[in-house]
Image (tube, rainbow, N blue to C red; front, top):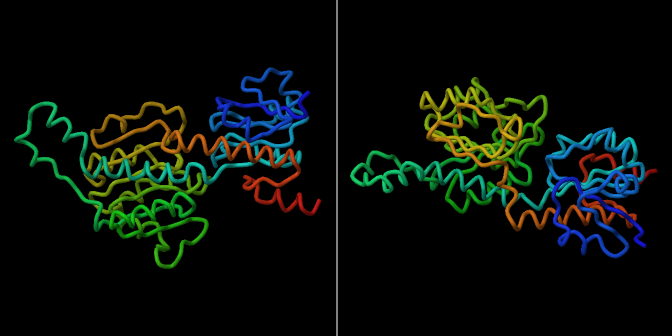
Length: 315
């Protein structure tokens, strides 16, 4: 008989996580109330809620592993109050998201949609009417210089871009730091958002900031949907202030229709840039490893509540 039960909240690849969880663990992909009642670990997808009601259904729970970094739908405080760490997987999707930023930047800078339409519709003679831009020599403005922001900066160097960064929470290194967000907006040919969503950063990119953005800039949001005011972004596109917008994240999700979606210089993806095949395998492995660590009496590699490991060590 198995020693531990670990449950999934949302689709989790059992073939990937089971070997990581190890012997003596039963992994339940579609748990019943009876499974929840005996579960000691949970691997939780980003769109699933973990709240007081869930914690009441799982009285034996010892660890929650969130696939990804954001814990918007997880009551971390309630879990911590019960001594339950919320393990996160900060490294698994960083490179995939950074690649997504450049997929959008290239798509919009190289004007792939209107050029495709020209060829498809036999309007070759009009190709000179579509201005095609360059990333080489352009300035990339990164808002939020954590793991993903830094990786975006690394890729920017390969494209020959100059990088500037602003972080509301932790100053970037001096060689890229831009202390004032408005100054960053004025300098950036491509502005990309990677800061956490808090009350202080909600609609960080708003009408006031977009009034300062470099004319013809491209705006990309692969961070959190609430960082951007979509009404202000649409107005900036219609005025020509923005040349393009790329969105992988929305507020709320699933996305509700907004007129911004219909603009020809907008590219949209359904919060999938960090969910490539490789990234999903890595995040499942990291989540399972976080669960296995706690069940074995070890601290997980990364937790949403930075004080948890300290409290555990001094308990």
